[in-house]
Length: 231
View 1 (spheres, helix red, strand yellow):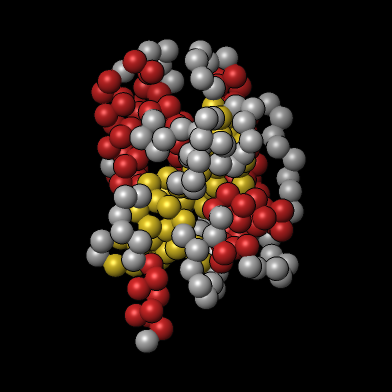
View 2 (tube, rainbow, N blue to C red; view 1 turned 45 degrees about the horizontal axis):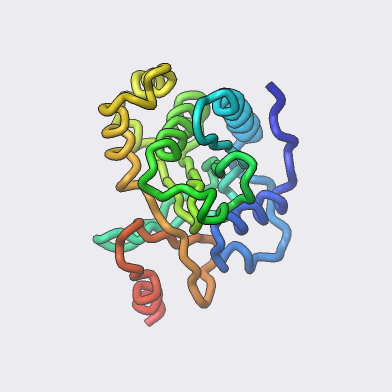
């Protein structure tokens, strides 16, 4: 396996900014310090990416690929907009994966090459990336960009996620040759992914060192929340 060549922190920042399409990251132009996520964790995340892509390349049917594996530390934190208010989670020990339709323009493939957020294959892939990262590294956060026409993130926090699933058993089931036809696995993936799907949103004026994300399907209350904070 050949890990992806290590880029600079500034390159990682541009990659996440493009994937998120949020003004808060794109607006930052100063040099970024080395990511707090350990280089060992980042290197192993890239090995996971290479492993998974090797398997996906020989999978039947419509193909997916993991196009990015890098540190989330360049954004500082995520601010989750949830029904009971805002919740800030540190991103400095997080890993970011981008997924896309194989050989499509990425991120955000054209609608003819993109997948809906409800599609099982991308959810299964996001679940596999999160499980492997938490089981094989010390990362506290995993964010996976789904191969959708508009940005949708799957946000996994180590503690809460690992309490909700038997991780080794779930990963073993995902690697089964019949995983694609296993209805109970689809139910598991849907149950684990749906409450963890978020949409990054632009905020003006851009907040310092955070990205606001609103739960998929929930009303966009970020602007009113920011106004309340500033009043």
